[in-house]
Amino acid sequence: MSTEVARTVRPGGRRRAGRASARSATVMVIAVQAAIWAGATAVLALWWVDTASVVGPAGWLTGAGRITGLLAGYACAVLVVLMARVPLLDRTVGTDRMARWHAAAGRYTIGLTLAHAVLIVEGYALVGRTDPVTESVRVVLHYPDMLKATAALLLLLLTAVVSARAARRRLSHETWFYLHLVTYAAVFLAFGHQLTNGAEFDRPAVRVGWYVLYAGAAALVVRYRLLAPVLLARRHRLRVSEVRREAPDVVSVVVTGERLDELTVRPGQFLRWRFLAPGLWWTASPYSVSAVPDGRSLRITVKALGGHSAALARVRPGTLVSAEGPYGALTPDRAAGRPALLLAAGVGITPLRVLFETLPGDPVLIHWARRPEDLVLRHEIDAIAVRRNARALYSVGHPAGYRLPLDAATLRGLVPDVAGRVCYLCGPPGWAAAAEAALREAGVPARRIHQESFTW
Image (cartoon, rainbow, N blue to C red; front, side, top):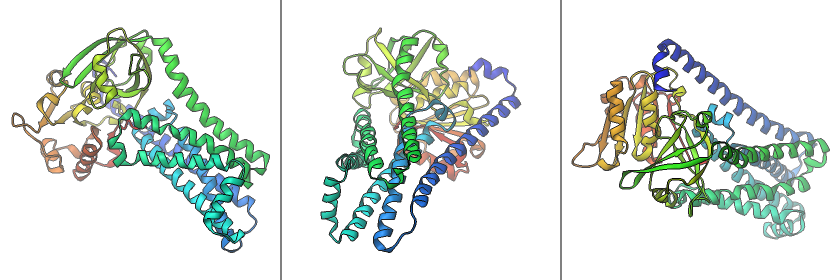
């Protein structure tokens, strides 16, 4: 919503529209969760219908192995759907929530797969009166498609390792992203052994249903992760028009193109950008729009945090750009008519700078940074604050500035009505966790704290 439109809508109308949007998002969240759990229930029903009785320890172990295997196969399909970046889900459920669901689905998938392997081998070992190691070798080498299934398990374990927080901090976004794509290979390799070794799939109807489930998940990935960027590039013909330095390690990149008003990029949203230049074309990275979209150009502001972001300072005007999106539900709709509090750290200010300009009412913005020069876009934010008669506060860990503690008492002192506001957060994970904890202690309900995650 542009500033001009926001000023012409009556406050009551904004509040009703915002509440209606919030209700629609809540309904969609409940519907998606219900669909996922209904699918899991249907998968369990496959085992129940196909199993006449369970007798003895071996029967219980193999039965549990079949159940965890079925659920692991279903979780793989759910994991792929959550990775597909379906716009409807992104706009309603929200990128931050989808990222959390995706992470949870990954943990469930790996846990269920490991449990399946251990339980099946233990059950078969009891039946064959042999040891688990010997039985494992027999299963892997003599059962159909088990070599591929073993490779899939190893790839899933690799994904788990690189997704662990300690490892994630040591990897660049580009490296983590491409290592994460092995999930697709793991799902592909595991699919065959589900059908050849799963007793539940002897029935043609069940087999067809499983094919439909996986084909549908694959179609979503092809449509929204492969074809969508190509179609967007052909339609809008994006190019870099300007690269402007905002700070020693921060640049703003302005991209122009054709019919950009049709992209419908909303304040607070981000796109995945691929700059077709040497060293940059092979990866797409998520960057928020840092200026109100005007239908003629889009601007991102990027801090040099890795190889890709550092190289953007050297991009030349005229460079072709491919984009994917827009994504994210960190938009004015989240406010639902309430006043907003915007909390940013470092370059996390980029989406909140746009929200500060476009949110109705009296938004308050607080920006934490290590140094005064890290308060990027401050001149623009100060101008917005003067124009809107709004408050923008800054905190730096430098003698020339002042440092605001990130705690509930400080937030209440600066914003006495903080408990009644909708809060937007954007910053590094550790800072965001601390900010969320301070807001909760200050009385803000979890449902009114919104943040964005780009790690999906």
